[in-house]
Image (cartoon, rainbow, N blue to C red):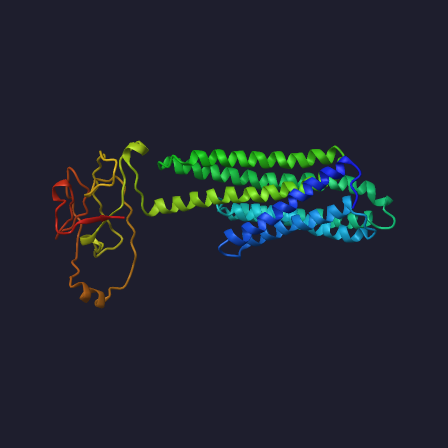
Length: 368
């Protein structure tokens, strides 16, 4: 192995860092993925291993004196196809988290497949022709098609990333409208990471049009390894956001002083765990009055709320459970109950009301 020029030394540094990132990415795959299945996992794994094949192939091409050119050409082609298209599939699989429009998702998938067919196959033929015993007819077509495929694949990734940013911004705006003020940092992080990815992509394109072939081909696997590492930072924060959004749909608790509104909470009373059953199950009437919390800590008694989540689950009445509870089912019909300081759900036979004067009742409420 001989290093005669500065470009070869730079190529060696880039390829070494890319291979190190490949090893680190495999550690992430083995330790962070709970389920080793699905499109995101396999596309991420394939793209990661594509970096290794591509790096080894270009290392043998630039730094090694190997007469069998088809050997490193095969490694380069395998790594290039899996690394480039694998990265696009990773972006596509991540897009499912924030985009639910099936037509748009299908259009993105068709774009990836079509570009893979009309760009990969001609380049494979040209590369083997360029490494044949008569490479002269293939040199000029290789230069032209190399720039075409590089530009199209970068544009493809920009389109997918643009859709991802657009849909995520819409999701973050929705979060802010319901009082979640912690999305601003996530939005800045998302924009910063995608801006960095764009700079990396255009750096590859710039090296290609500057005719710095050795540096460009060694810089490319390094760039794609960095982009895969950035995937974890984006995905982890996005999954956390979507999980918080789903959990807020079921229950929420926030202090009025922090959110700028009324203190919200989810209440569960030990003595009122059975939902009111009416003869017409699709008719509900809830009477709510609002108030403001003046305590920074969780209240020891039930406080007034301004948000109710009513979930109706149809189920068969179990005689065994009724016998065990020792209680009877009462038929209820809703009517208006006025309350000045508490929220109430009322019926003809009884209604539950909790306020500060009744905090020593037999059934003490519990907060979850």
